[in-house]
Image (tube, rainbow, N blue to C red; front, side):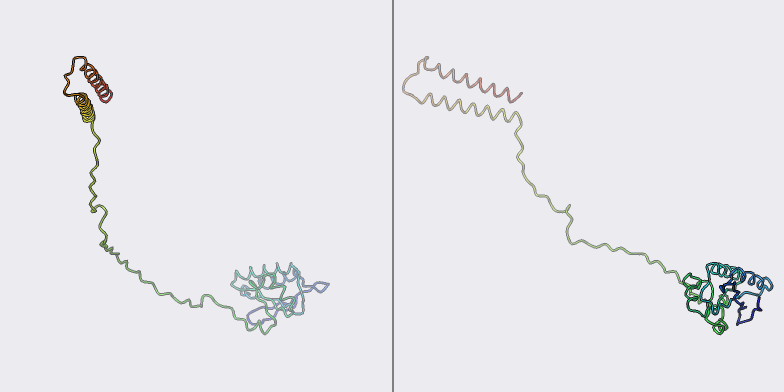
Length: 222
């Protein structure tokens, strides 16, 4: 393994290549762990991928693993990718959200991590509690008079006649008719004396009318 060099706050390691000229992720894992195990102060470690167009998926997994190990030390992992195709592939898989991707060593040297403990968070003034104002309900006088105060019209309803009244009226009606018949019979010939035989029809008629009145009264009172 070539000697690492210091670039800004990062320990920059060279990228090992396999016989076909591709990035050797397994060999780089051994080099990485050798560096961080030799010094507990190694928090920012990077790999120089300059001149490499692509890496395989095992490299992506290794970079994510390095990020998690350095995060425990409050550090981070970074790469130098001067090829646009490699930078796009790293961003496409979402590694830019976890590791730092630089174009060259000068950009890496200018990097300064943000110390969250030194960031001043503006204090929010305490909000005073708002006093609750009791609501006063005003009684609104209604201009319209209530329905209950309107006098109800007085209607005289005819009361139905009771049974005794009805019977009395029927008897009076029958009596008036009897008198009317009697007067007609007497007015036929007032100058001629009536014989006993001529009075017989009158008596029969009166008896029949009285029977009819009794029958009507019976059915009414029943």
